[in-house]
Figure 1 (cartoon, helix red, strand yellow):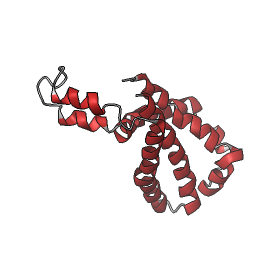
Figure 2 (figure 1 turned 90 degrees about the vertical axis):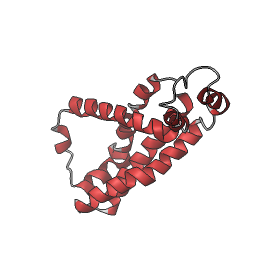
Figure 3 (figure 1 turned 180 degrees about the vertical axis):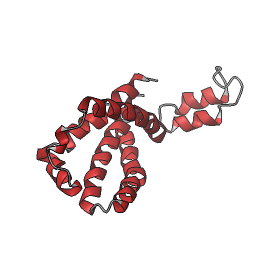
Figure 4 (figure 1 turned 90 degrees about the horizontal axis):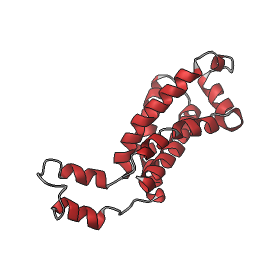
Length: 160
């Protein structure tokens, strides 16, 4: 297991955001839909925002791990079984046989996309409706999270 991949995948929301919210991509459309003017974007402490984005991305990487790696759930079944990690145990035999199944970039990206529809879109949609935001605003943000979750899921699934 490559735990470092979680630290690498935590940077994906930053990288995706730099591209997705660039004025030549969806930045201008997002500013118009959200009512933010370009001058407001220069006021905040960007080092704090980027640092917190990375930290929250690290938390999200841990959540994505359980979303895209099926074997994470099998481990929880054996969590209270004594000697489950010993050679020849049911858990170790299961992992020897099935431990590498469905661990590809493509499979992780698929789960990331499904997660963007079943987790990110409802959260963004509910908050946006109460904030009286437009459908355009919702789909700009959902598109960002769909791409981000697909990239994170693919990387984690293929490399963890």
